[in-house]
Length: 322
Image (cartoon, rainbow, N blue to C red; front, side, top):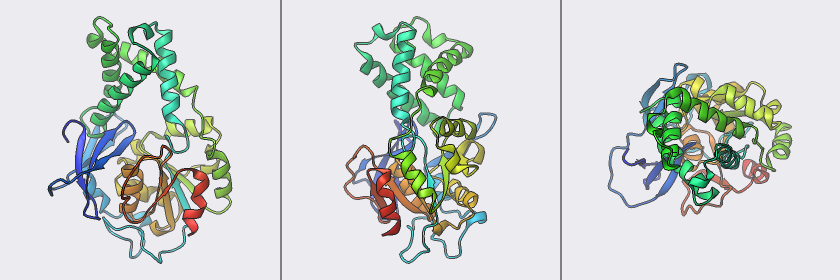
């Protein structure tokens, strides 16, 4: 990894450059780059906040025994034509079911205003942009195992306050940085809202499919978020998160753990998420049906074979049955 970017070559043979963003790996663009060994490392946040690191492509190619299916495609293979009917669906949470980006932006503006720091920026949009860029930088370091979850939060606070012109911000104690972040997080949690298509779509799908969650966050945090927006009852205990599981998407093992919670084989499950690489490519490499929820209409010239693209959850039933 260099400057937040990682080179990766997928099954299609087309090289891609990915950027590690605040909620996982995002497609940075398709480029003509030379063949290089792709060693992308996913990391496992433990309960003590320390992270262990394993090559992501090595993990993607490793079947998870509890929900391994006979003849399951290996690493680099998509869901095969003629595979068994989809009986279960796994969903990402942030910016798939819950509008995480909007809540984070509104929370930042509210907190900065409350702290009398908004005047340090030309406008609220500038403050949001700076916070987002700082978040992307330090969360990338967390995902790559360079820092703990708590340490990246502290670093984000110190860097943001430095940008706001706060004297001695870089010398702020961990306790003060935690307090500042906690106040921001409180604003964010009170603003969680599900996308308009989430509840009606999930309610209809629940009548025909087993539903579950696969998230790169922590279990208590995501269960509370889903409860707050009225979606938790649809998933019950079928929620797997990276912190407790020990590996984050796009590692195959976390997708397989989700299949196991549904009591289904890999080929019987589809995964839906907003991140092209973390959710869609990760699910495809793990042997699941892969659906990319492209809410923002991002332009991708050539999605990998086997990945279905939708703009809304209302479009999901059609791609599961065609």
